Length: 301
Image (cartoon, rainbow, N blue to C red; front, side, top):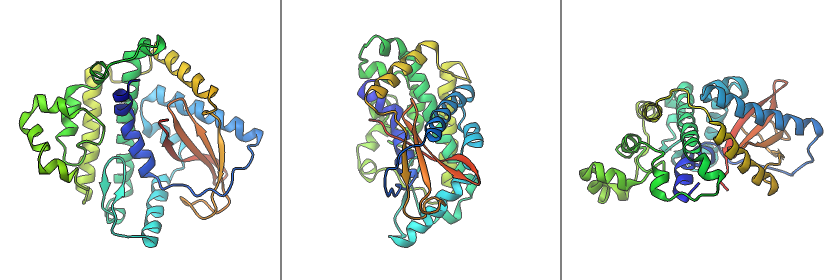
């Protein structure tokens, strides 16, 4: 992908994965067992398969995530708030959220936001891969104007007109300026300097979720297909990229061992970090006798 195409496709993932989840505390890298290597491959394959089949993170979460992963996140953030500045905002997916929302918003509010953000991001990636698979396979570099065409102007305008989502996805503000000069001028003044506002109430959080869902609807409407899946060419392009990552040693699973309680996991728990072709790292731990995803994070490089 070009610089801008990659930025558009991955900005939300970076925000979601690096800010939604607190950083792990690792004690040491232990050796992987053969069983863990098999588990890593099977989990990555199933994760990709289910996303391709359903295009819906909620289905993947129901099947593969630990059931209370949102509750674990909330409790972890509450614990960290006691140890640090409890007045600092939380960076979530996407945007900034007042810490009071850990108590004011429901578990369902947080869960719906997480799913809406990931579904929107996933379909942006699928759209870009499908449209430009042949370019990727033939080594043709896309210019920024061509890459930007992956994202419908209605989607760009929707988010750039939103007080919280504005600027969160790396969309080209210039496009909005062309379609709405007054808004573009406003963004050049004091409003732009202040940046997007923080989410303060459950109602604002719910509005962000609904806007993300509307953005996905507009994206799918533009494609004329409400169940977008990777084309054969896109799968080939993804396979080529995966092979390049494997050659660089970037697709190897790893083991992390936390030295204190983290996301509800006891100290000493072995966490299997598993890469996928979309560069999501799935972190898996044994919970109640079953291996489940406890978090997922994206590394763009």
